[in-house]
Image (cartoon, rainbow, N blue to C red):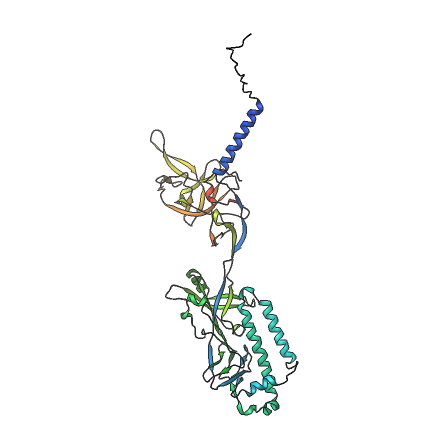
Length: 465
């Protein structure tokens, strides 16, 4: 039997939809929509208001200005210092000698001083100097190592020189009395054995380049160096009054000038002192503040650059992020036009309106007060409109709403919706602001606010993520 001409039609299975597939499809679509909405909508994040304070970056590198006189020599020869750097000398005290022939220098190198040439007091002084340097050493300021090296070398040689002077018999045998010239302090002051060219600087000489230190060079006056007539030998800081000059912006300079005196912490030793404020702005527009002290000069007599911290008063209050701040416009009306009414006794105004027949009627409209002055209230602009007439209670006097003003505030979400609260900023930096606490129309500690004010609108219901 032939099958020629028979057609075979494939069997098509019908689409069997069961309840499980429908539920799965619905859930899948719902997830896709939620993910899409999550990335398309702003994320509302809350922030708990806490008490705190802000401190600005108040650490500065200052330039020390002192009354300094450079003493030049009147002899040629090898200089040997006997006054210790950083100590006070009186007029007529021995500061250094000049060995014209070099014989004293030879004697100092060839004499057998032994291991105990320094006294216990001298050794204690050296140990104290080394320990002090180790405690304050900062790896970022490695140049201080060289200053420390010169200081120690100078101290050892000066102590050794004292021992030689005390041995008069040995000096006589060396013929010291015939070729060593003794030089004495011309006036009282603090002895310093370095020159840097900043000795005559004043506040009016200040420039921003001086603080960069790229051209700064400190020349150390070393014991046993060969000097010529007229060379710089040492310098004297002759006045206990001294200043530290820092570079600041104009606003801070005005703030410090108003205070007259500012407390300063010296980072080198953590000591504090009060400095008298003086300001100066140069031709380039750079502003400098001079802080003048009447003590501690001897502690920093060898330092030209001094790191200090200004101990300004910290503003304390409620600490909130700047991202939570927003500025809004409000209507301003006289206080006598605001009254209480309605079933809840809320604040509001008597708004002039018209009925269907065109007759003027008065209706109470509740409105929120956001801030107040002695004579006016800031009212919500969502209810009132510019040009509305409001009636003074128990009177026929009218006031046309038109005056506006702006307030800075945040969105409080304690009640589940965005409620604007005015804030008074006491102090602010780049990230946070300190605002007054417990104000009538403001925030209180532990209030919950929106972290980013741009993500919400007025009276929006809040669903935090």
